[in-house]
Image (cartoon, rainbow, N blue to C red; front, top):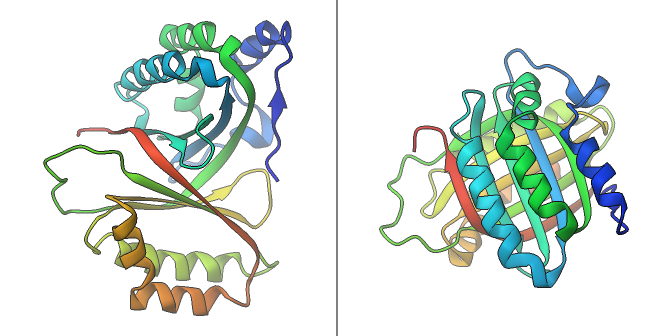
Length: 242
C-alpha cells in the first residue's frame, strides 16, 4: 500500500516547505550509472483539477529544460479522475535535488498545495528505459499509461529484472507501444514499478496478447507475491530532445 500524506487545512504551508527540501539518506541514494526516478501520486480537490493541471504543465515544461532531467510524464487516473500520477526521470538524485530548488518548482508548490488532498512521493532507480523507434501518430490524443506495481519474492529480483527486460524490449517493437520502463524501489525491498505507454487501449490489449507477454507471465508466475495495475491517461509526455 502506498504511504500517503493527508493535508488538513493549515498543514499545507509546512508540507510545501518539506517538499522543497532535497531527499536525504536512503531516499536519495545516488546512482552513478542508473537514472533516478521520482514517482508522485496525488489526490486533488476535484474543483481544482483544471487549475492544478495547468500549473503542472508549466512545471513540467520548465523541468524538461533542466540539464539533469530526462523525462517528465504527468497523467490522471482513468477511474479516479482526481488522481494525478507523475513519473520523472533524472540523471541522478542530485539532479532531482536541484529541480526542487528551482523557482519554477517553488511557484508550482505555492500555487497548488492548497489543492492537494494527499500525496505520496517515492524514489526509484531505473533498471531499463525503453523507447519505441516508430514515429508518433500525427494526432496527439492522450496516451494510455499502464503502471504495474509488483512485489517479487525474496532472492528473485535479478531473475525478475532479466525477464522483464526481455518483455519490455520486445514490447516497444509492438505497434502502438511508445515506452516501457523498469524501475526498482529505493525504500522497499523487492518492489518493482513497470511504466508503459501505449497509443490506446487496443495497443495495450494487443501487447498483452503477444507471445512475449505470455512468456513473461509464465516466467514470473512463481516469483511474484503481489501485483496491481493502474490505468492512466497522459496529460503530458515530455522527453529530452523531443
